[in-house]
Length: 157
Image 1: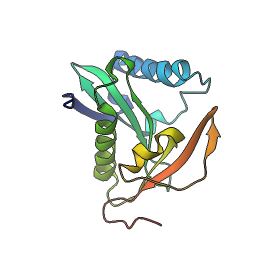
Image 2: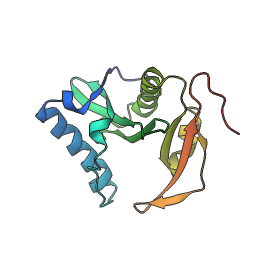
Image 3: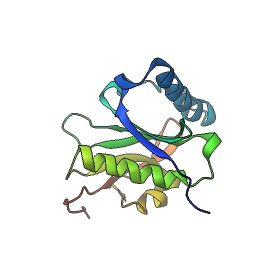
Image 4: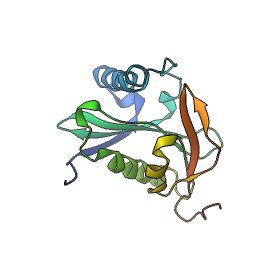
């Protein structure tokens, strides 16, 4: 099955219109809170300091990831999702490749971190991420921390 054609949009929160931001946050709540049945504070105060990466198909958000850099830390990719309306179109790997590219552009030479749902560990490993923690439970879902060396940065064993 060929990959679906999409456009990439990477920007900061303040550049979204009210309608665009509403649609994006609604999608995140629909997936992370409702679909995954995880009552947690989805609006965590980090969006204003983050880059928001969207894969768009016909102007609609088909996949999304948030890139956030904690103070004095490695950039983190999080809130990774493919819209229920666009699943099965091979967008997950495309989204992550674009997120890695955005990290390398905005934070060159730095490693990239993420907190992966444990069942996706092999998927993230295929993209160059290695575990950095034991499995832990967050919001009722098993997770594992993972890290990918930045361009020009040696991977830790």
